[in-house]
Length: 436
Image (cartoon, rainbow, N blue to C red; front, side, top):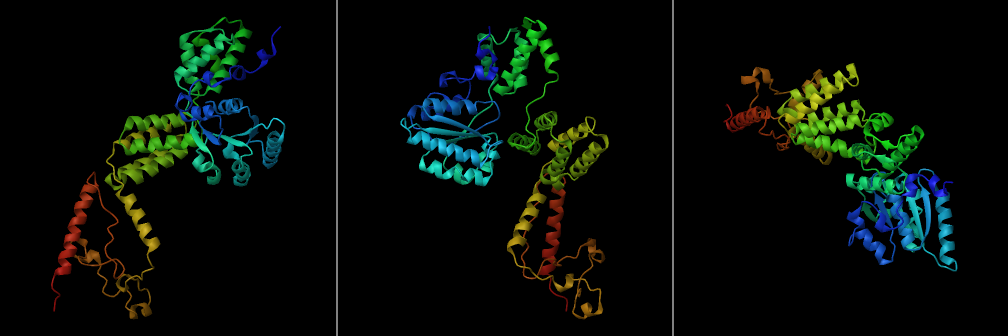
């Protein structure tokens, strides 16, 4: 007859019961590390555990309660609300005022799902010391947690488990006879499939163990794992922290002129489920921001790649995006246009509304002509070289702001030379004695 523990999910059966049993996160739990010192101090403090799924956030919170002999109250921000917070406050008060005077740890899973007012509800009780607040989040707490709550809680960043960490979990599963024999290459595949997520690994191992038992398989082989799991899908958060980290890595690889890295991040995002149309828009943005006028062909090619994807769809259209990314990575780089635009915006925002000089105004009516609109305007096409040397196109009294400064790369080398020539002609015209 099987024991009750046999029917527990494998993840629960293998959950660490002490700090010594925790696999991974040694940068915060190892000897002398901050969270380990907090455990050893005997004084719990409010904290936020930030990291991807399946890296031990809930486990650490439970171990904290055990270490401090504290009442453990768990709230899911996905399902809970203010009522759950009120109930937790009552339970904490009862524990504090009871005969045992027990501490309370309130654990809030996915705390970023609570809105501002819900997060604020914790503040007075954290400040009074009624309970210790422990939040878990997969999102950057700087953006998702109220600054008031964030200032009262230490933030510990948890990392995805390494391949060696995950292999230790497989060994533990085999040690408790939860898994039949399994060949090494199959373990490597499962570790890659888990992608740093211990919970995903444990759930997969449990599925394989049940399936193997039903099929009468005594030894799990790699080919069989492939048939059971199907095509490997990488963990990917299409709208969260990992998404923005990945798009940042792609953009910076293009800017850094590394075509292999840029291609890697593009393919990884597409493989993980990113919308190719979003990727196409970002590629166009990269062309305008980081290549600019150093190679105007880059903008054209990026737009054409986006149009090609619209016409072909996936997977054929993704090749156009890939080649656009490669081209952008190897193209000469310039953010001169991008910087010029930002400088102009900042200047106009803080500057007053300067009147348009009369000679630049249009004069479609007789009254406007009588008011000298357009008077003395010099038509550039009638001037030598198509350039009205010495003419001013800025508001009166405004010094040349120098927004645009071409870089010495690509086409902007010639653009810079052209501007230098035009400035010299302007200077010469302005110093020339007036005709009289």
